[in-house]
Image 1 (tube, rainbow, N blue to C red):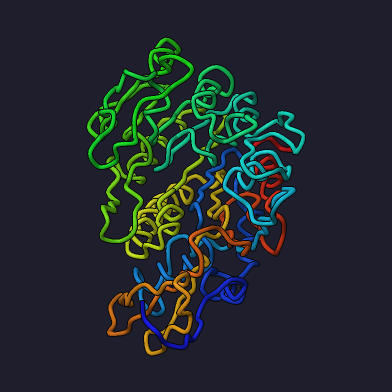
Image 2: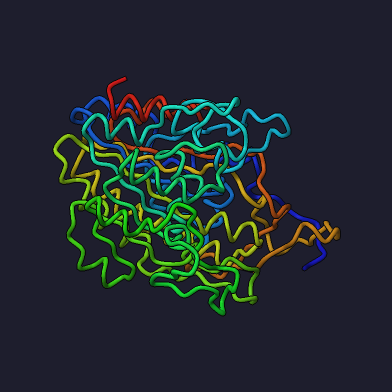
Length: 421
């Protein structure tokens, strides 16, 4: 850790100032024009960079694209800013469950809740509504497929930790056509390790623990083709696809140099391409949820090096999705983050760290791509903050995502595009 005063480049609401320059590659009128001239709305691809704020986007922009380059996610013409405050009796800082519930249901709720209201009553959620409308649906994540963010779109539980119950609801209630990511432990009962060994050396705490029986066997009886490796995914051609590629998350989230690994196999882009190929066969359209969990998990660890790797993987995936929606103008693409994690700021390396409190940790220096310049990352917490998160979008309805609003507004736009409501 360094000891020097800081010059803040991006922090908190300062990210809003950058929205018109750093986060928007075109004026808002372009987004409105795009919405008017696109074909009739049919499909939605919703991308969550879990824990991603304006500071994460700026850090990645500098590291990946240089001083004046643009991330793929920042080239989407419509730009907005969403507040993430939950309806929680104890805090105004959201977790992923309450934030995703706002997106999936249009209702604010307490932290830990998966598509239930503040009284614990189940709410209607977008993944099931899309399926009822005859559309294909899918989940892609580098987290457990039953983690809070995807769970809110496809299940309803009082607490996010009920991951085997969430998996059961996927199979028996919401029935997504594609489920790809980590979290095999929640699908097999204790003593049945499946494709990934119990208590692996990299994390001895990981082990199979389904309390709903053998959910992989149940998935197969319901017509899902099950795969557990990158090669298996490549060969898969089922109309319904379940792929679990790790015990828990598809990476090892630890501080730098303490066993931290970011190398998901298959990659986020590969999983998304397979999911897109599968759900896009539905002539009525589809809803696809895509998530990069590494941004959040490595921010919790104040691990800038691995956070930037996760951001790079996310942006490559968004680049592929931009090409898809350019050829399919009836598809709305939205990229955002459920909350900020780490209280991240981007600083000049020529200044000193004034914190000295053992909490605010400086990370770096990192090189600005293609230059001699460097920058530092300064983490002010290992938890979440209440900073609003940027939203960028393109396609039908994208102009409705400009401006400043609550995260529940995102639900209204997604639902209107998908269901005409």
